[in-house]
Image (cartoon, rainbow, N blue to C red; front, side, top):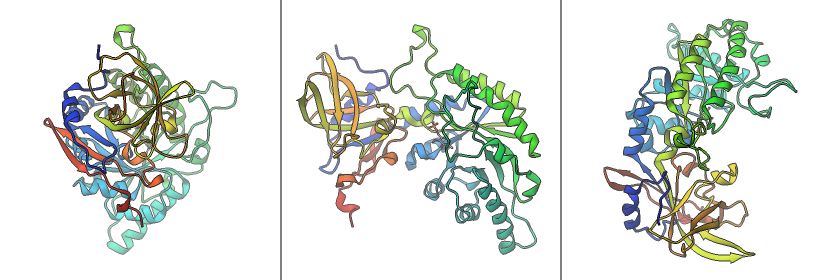
Length: 423
Ligand SMILES: Cc1ncc(COP(=O)(O)O)c(C=O)c1O
């Protein structure tokens, strides 16, 4: 029996089968916009959380436009992301800037373009932003101070050796600063800024509501204490992203007792509680994968099949040059064969064309009649796909990007041969 996995929407199958790729198209992404819109609308049916979209997950114009149409605002982490969001006609007052690499020059450029919400990740960033406002006020309108930007300080927590560490490890990152470092500031020292919030995000791909709630709960008191220490009236708490996607199908689902995949309803209940505990007016999340992963597929042809030391291998037309996430997280995207087959399944090693053993998209089951010329579809590729890859190595073609809307496949970005980017 040909069973398709639950993540694959079979209503798109005939369109993908009928699609004829050009010679340059060695793999493509397709995003189901109607399904995305319906999913986002569900996320917005609540009044507990203000939702931002972490643009790094998928900066395609059509994706940004769909999030805009469902009332999401936008978290950008670079000038490129800012330009892309502004190019979709989004007002800069709906943009938040996060990221550890904000130079004074970048902060200046963001303020000039009208961005007024910042997650600040270092003492330098705080000083620079305060200076930028004073300097631009002098240049533009010496008598009127520019609107004070809303500033959240990004906190990185660690637990003392030997204590139960809810984050599972104390690896040091450049994202934010310790409570101790932030304690050296007082908000009144930055008169040009409205420092009124804290940001914390140190977890990834969480699949359990229970774990998530317990983790968030343990952040509340250190954050409240920090706010009091530095003279901040804590109005906004931003808990970043990290809501998980069950790439490996580990969730047991309701029928089997549930519990291993996230329930959005439970998140709302839990965050209402966290919001009350923290006593904040606003609770923010910047969603990446939880917003867009499910709407996207990546389609790629099989160019070779061989047996090697007893292992069946498939070599695909593209691998980590189009979609690197599996190699850097050791977490494959699930895969299915793009055609009907009643053959039994077996496990294959799925390799791309690059000259590195890293170029592997997984060790995954497929029907055992899969062969050269077949196409494979990978799921949950709406997030961390096209722009997270390493497209230039070995001079292969860039992937194409399509949207599927009202039953039609529409090309947004054509595949490109290496001659278009080689100098
Ligand atoms: C500051 C910030 N917020 C939100 C996100 C989105 O994370 P996720 O895709 O896990 O929701 C990221 C991802 O790196 C991030 O850096």
